[in-house]
Length: 284
Image (cartoon, rainbow, N blue to C red; front, side):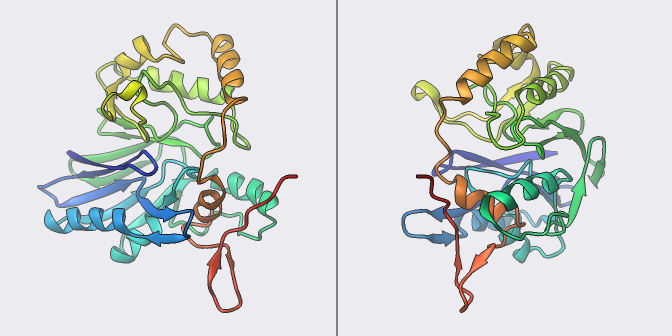
C-alpha cells in the first residue's frame, strides 16, 4: 500500500490517493473541485492533478470516498468520476440526515435517500480494493452526522474532519445535527486503536506559521492533542468545544459547498436555460 497526498491551498484541504503498484488498484479520499466564490468560476484543476497521477502510474480507480459532506470546499468526486466512470462514490448512509436538514434550510427538493451517490456505507463495512488494500469503515460522527473514518489495512486511519494535527485539535460541532458529545465518543474510538496507527487528517492550516502537515499517529494524538487528549474527560471536552464553537465564523464556502455536496456533486438550482446557481439565504 502506498499513499500520495495533494494539498489544496485555497481550502487547506488534503486529498489522498491510496494505491498498489502491484495490483494497479487505487482509491481516492476527499477530492476537491476548485471554486472561486467572487467570480463564480468552477474548475477541475485539482481533479486533473489526480487524473494525471493515476494515469502516470497506470492505476485503476475503484472507489472515491467522501469522509463527510464537506462545508469548506466543493467536492471533486463527481467530476473525477467522469474520467473514471467505473469508480464508485461512497459516503456514509447518514447523508440522508444531512439532506433532510439542508433541504429545509435552502427550501430545496433534493432527494433525501442518498441516491445521488453510488454506495451508502456504515460501521464495520469492509471494502476489499486489492490484495494489499482493505478499507474498513469506522463511524466517527460529531462534526457532522455523516462523518466516517477509513481504517486501511489496520495501519492507517483517514479521519476527515474528526481530528486534526495535535496542535490544531478537533473538528467543530456547531453545524446542524453536529454533536460535541458524539465527537468525543468518536475520538475515543480512534484512541482505542494501536498507538502506532498512522492518522491522516483532512485539513491543516499551519498554526503559528509552521509548515503544512497531514500525518500523525494515534499515540501522538492521545498525548498531545490540544483539545482532546486521552486524559481529557467528556465534561472538559464538551465545555471547551461548546464555548469554542460559539465564537467561530462560518466557513467561507459553507453555502455553496453544502448545496453542491449534499446533492452528490450536482447543482440544485438552475435557470431556465440550464445555467446553475447557488442560493444564498440572507439574514436581516
